[in-house]
Length: 344
Ligand code: ASN
Ligand code: ZN
Ligand code: CA
Image (tube, rainbow, N blue to C red):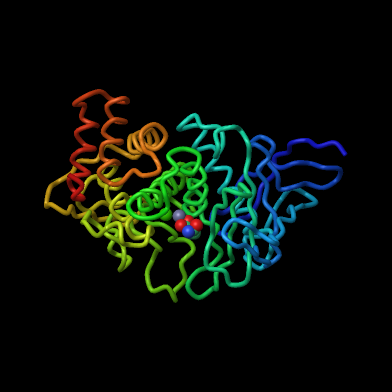
């Protein structure tokens, strides 16, 4: 069979109708994108991996989605290919974000695409990146607390775990684990803004599209005021490293929000945000693009597996100095935003 790249589209669950670059193989199309490293999406058929740590006895399948006319999905979750559209689109936008904004060629930086599995397990309320398969896995959610986990911010979050793993390799426990999680929330959010999708516009909440009423809050996490989830830390303290990494990330998320948007109340894409500082100071934001530049350089040049919050302050100050100069307004803003979350 001859394989050629083809331009199609799909009706997604969360992002409306989106463009998809696919592969024509014989008379049918595959949900596989040769222009982005061969990234593809497959059906896990509601199976799960059976693993002990990283050694897996069996793995859920990733049966490649195919379509007869290159118009994918229906926009309804009852159609198995609908969430495949979201997953493939999320990978596309994440790939493009890293390529266009950071000149990074794929998650590993080697031009190689990853793959996605959707419909993993039954009522599975999670999504995860796995370095071993170099792949993304998405549950459908239980429908009570969460729906299918295929939103843009979750896709960007999970794939950014792959970027962290190939760069700073922040150890996934203690303060470095909180920084690892914050890195994924920061880039997941910047990916969501980059997509500029009117049905899923950028904000500083994580998972706002996937939550259902049973969860009892409007998002999984809130970067402007992390404690809104009832568990995350807004401010650094000696005990921070004892928290689960998804809660110690709050300090890094709060820093990122303050650096980009500044303190105080602000409406972004129709969503109210409000970020009080820990020390009562007022912080002026320098914008999302500069946050992304500074955090990416800090992650890829200065952070290591054992970097803690004090080390992240130094890493981002060094990155800001490289990018904007010593004593630049940007470097001063980085110092002010860290001080505002009690990383002094
Ligand atoms: N969704 C979770 C996360 O990205 C799953 C995991 O890998 N721990 O943190
Ligand atoms: Zn994560
Ligand atoms: Ca969001």
